[in-house]
Length: 413
Image (cartoon, rainbow, N blue to C red; front, side):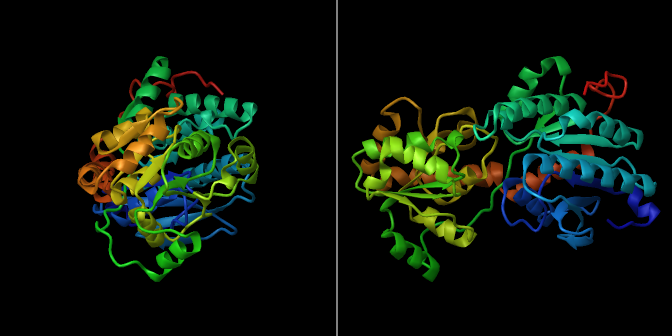
């Protein structure tokens, strides 16, 4: 983090972002968000400072942002808590030593450090700053966590809500939940969605890497359904695979996902999908251009996410795949609206929808793709999302008066 001269700094909104693994983004929704927030920055009145995980202490600039590394060994959940707390301490020290900074914003992504946030919020307020929080999705609902960890996540969420000056929700469903679940805390919230790139539409000539992918897995354009996402129970892989096997389609099911051998073997014991040649686990694909081509080549995209806010993989699918079959939950329906078809966990719901999709003609499918691209263009493009953030940061910094959990409130830990 570097200093600027006093007069110029007084005109600049300094925004300190904590909670992503860092930029440039290699993976992850928050990492991509911060990368795009800095890349598409238009106002010279905003200066971003971004905490990044690293093996040493260094500072560097990327996309015009001042980036600083925090050493946080390991990947266990407690290391993420340590990382956020270390970043908070670093930011507060920086603001204290740069007294020319006026009304800084500390923006914490996710609710990992709720039991500890009260004292940092107090220090931020004493320095004339505000604490903004992105509550992310319902992390406490994820099946991968043990019951004690899930209880911690729920407690941490409540305390982050209690002490935040503003909660920026990337889903209207999440915002409604926060306002209802924690109504006694009188949370101040706003909604700004996650964003997506607008890529050219239409199927261009297949790249060599995509042709290799097709040849390796025996695929043809329009000859497969596609799933992209982490291989975890809350993304409803069991329902999607079971219902696909029940359907009468002769197309393949291509699953691009993260490794999870325990879940893979558990589901195969129940579903026996390895005995059906239509099911293809294709591993992970990190090449975004290749992934875009794979999405374009699919007959339809299946999306089973049941936890979280505006999901990046859903936005990417809406921007590339004409026909999208989505699990009917508020997060997904608020994003796609009438640009997709929906299924439930009821037996036969998705299998009958797949059979219907198999019969749909190109004339019937194209309007879904047109509506999907319109949704992305009008509500989720990165330039639009960044403009919403800049408007908030420059003109809508929330006042401290009346905030639940401010310095005059209790110090719940």
